[in-house]
Image (tube, rainbow, N blue to C red):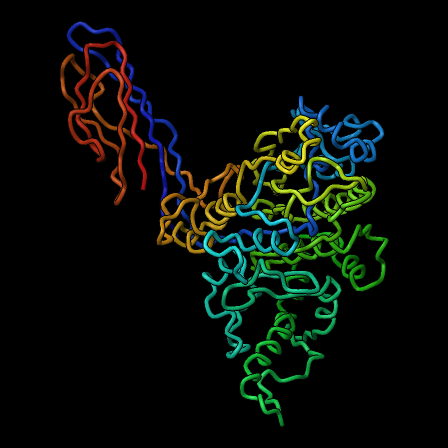
Length: 553
């Protein structure tokens, strides 16, 4: 993940007034743009996984010409969500074709401030309708092995921190800080590398409470942690016939269970440091440790986890990847009753997190909300919806390119649902974007990962029979300003400012090692030098001409 390439556009407008024996020429250099790989960034990513298959159609309701059809197909879901039907869903600034679920007032406010981007029609190839299968595909995301026991972020972290999963060398294999942190009762596939887990697993935010108060800091500021886990990683298994074969597996499990303990002091110091640029740190710590819970207006366990991450980040914890999970979205029945409750928790948790970020940290945070699959377009007999395919996902952050990306889903003619032959096809939204295009964009334009590394992790959009990438995944307009991009200096094109008819003149721009140059011209022709920093130009007998160059590397 090193500085890799850049593209810059150098524009020069050439004004050629009317002439008798010659003509005046003026060069107006346009602003230069660049996309320079900045190598390792200090930006972070938070993955919010909605487990069970969130209903994107009810989260972001289409209210365009498709709405009447959708109301016929989902009368109970829409009316149950709001007695005012579409008018009860939340309007968004400058959006006439979609409305937000009424429980997501906090996300609506973020959207109106330009900090939310919804992405319509996101899917994954070879879709699975089972929860384990679809979850594996979305978290793994590899073109070459969608059934692999690893995730795209785990593989990315392993490429940056090789040796992290070598628990035979525990604890010397560990970095000075957790490379990723996950909250939950089990270790998700997302942060698994092919060699092992790249995450620190905390069962809940209260797990951090135990770590925090288990530390002791002396007068010199030295921190120690007394673990309740007294089991030695390398202790042998006495009196067991399979001891040698089992020893390495047991050692691995013992080590992984103690990783969080090894980072107790690092996490505490980051939290304590955040007190200088954060609010309510002491009160919040009380809430996650079981007292003053309601006084801090904590919405849910998800809210506690998100706030904890904000405090760590404010305090300078270098961890770049976090995963949190929110369960309950497999709503085959009574969808309108439960969906609003869940979305309110997600919406409030994201808003609280964004509000807690220290001003100097805000531009360095990206959040992405994912789920394994959508719900079907037509509601079922239980006023719920079944497993679907393409879905809506969204990102949040101060640098996301706010708005709605992609078209509203097309709702088919309700008559198609009367025919068993067309029922299944009609019941799913058409795909517009693959998950891997989103992941590709995040790796390339948020973490500044070079293209060969990305290809090793998720493969390519098109590959030959040998697995060589011949077309990469799309780059989507997710960000206002990528940390991988740098504005370069104002360009200068030099050359004759006064020219005569039928004369040939030389023009040049700054020489960049390894770059290629594409010159374009009107009112003349390039006679030599195309592809280089210097060209020869023969101007026609015209009154106006232009010369531009695009420099890429």
